[in-house]
Image 1 (cartoon, rainbow, N blue to C red):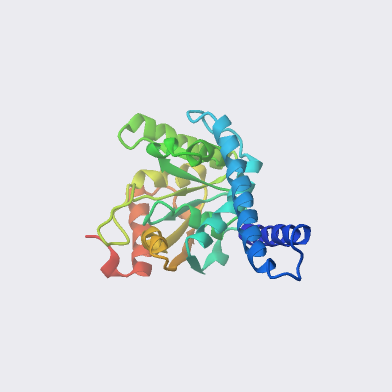
Image 2 (cartoon, rainbow, N blue to C red):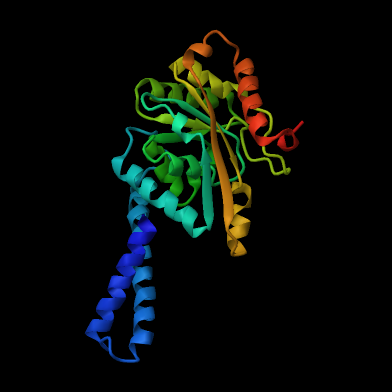
Amino acid sequence: MLLNLIYSLSALFASVLCALTVGFGSLWTLIVWPLGFVLGFALCAAVCVIAVWIPARRADPDAESGGDDPYIRAVVKLYAPAVFRILGCRIHTEGTGKLPKEGRFLLVCNHMGNLDPGIPLTVFPDAQLGFISKKENRTMPIIGPLMPKIQCQFLDRENDRAALKTILKCISILKEDKASIGVFPEGGVIRDGKLLHHFRPGVFKIAQKANVPIVVCTINGTQNMQANAKAGKKTDVHFHLLEVIPPEELKGIPTTQIADRVHAIMAADLGPENVAD
């Protein structure tokens, strides 16, 4: 949608430029119109960058997340699909109709690349998702300061007390109906050629304590996206919503058992050859 709008505005800018300079009956039109289109595209792109750069500059990178920011949420909704389109990403989905229509949920997915959170944000643009992210992402240019504005929470994996605080904050966000939460229970990206690794079960306590369902998903393909984009190749990304585990099935069960169940569901979809020992 955003790219189509930029293309349309760039074409309009090029047409107006031709009309005001050489007209449309001259051979110069063959030069002026393409140049006008490129200039219009550059101007639109600059406006898009400024639209996120200014609020990022004003944001306190160390501030705790407050309410969900409607402006930043709208920016994510527009920008995420555009970014993947620019990178040549084709997203193929299965089972997305299973997503709960009402109430909050904990979305759980395997972790293949740095752009993984953008896939469910693109597939479920109205789900109001926030993610648990490693604390290092807080310092990312532009993106880092804006993440708390869509209820993203930063996790310190080396500090158990700080990690517990993050878990409790996510529980609070779900209970207070501020957003749904997305997690990658593997705890990070492991580049060994496998699509699924062992889980850190603590994150499943979020669904238990908040009394929300677990939405089990898998992703495959984002690990190749950046390399393919540099080579000018398209990337097919597969995003599957496999199962929704209702909250009543989580009560009184150890988180390790929940983790094993979710892992087994994902492994069945990805195939045993893609699961780490």
